[in-house]
Image 1 (tube, rainbow, N blue to C red):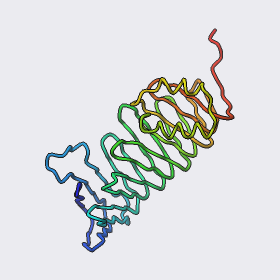
Image 2 (image 1 turned 45 degrees about the vertical axis):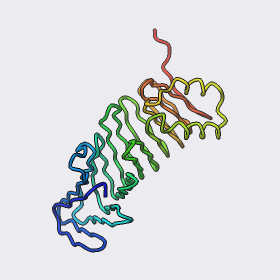
Image 3 (image 1 turned 90 degrees about the vertical axis):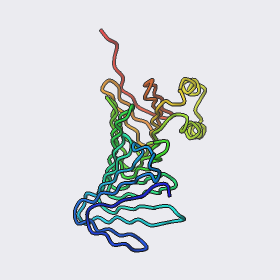
Image 4 (image 1 turned 60 degrees about the vertical axis):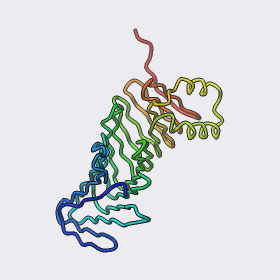
Length: 229
């Protein structure tokens, strides 16, 4: 087993399925079984609701963890609040639902709100859907869906979406300037962006957070700054 979960605080009942009814704040910490493991890779979870449930089950030698109730999870430089959480140890995948708020304090700071957020804890990609709203520096936006991660990880998905939208050669020229480790936002469905000087409404946008390059495909409306006096 790659990780061990330790539960502290609140009554605990050991069953084939571990069920914890948290009478106060409960804390669960995923620790690497190897004592030499990287402490920065630990997953720290805190249960916030007094009537929340923490369920830990064993599936094929790995932990599958579910939380029903308001919770907060910290991993590396990312913090996520949600009403429900499911974490699969082997897949290193977490799914948060219900009033999700994500704050990424890394090199590319981001604040995200959505109904559903799926996280890959190995490569730190994120997928959000349902009333997506986000803030990054001066950029604010909303959409039905958002994909966030390094360009190398999202490149195949972006190219597939562009083929479906019959994007032209001009887009390929823009993408040729993207670097593999550039952090990229892909926004889909009722997209609205505002950075103070510019405002755009469209259905599909790709935004490179390093170069600030941005392109949309399809019908759109934009407000751009006028010429300086």
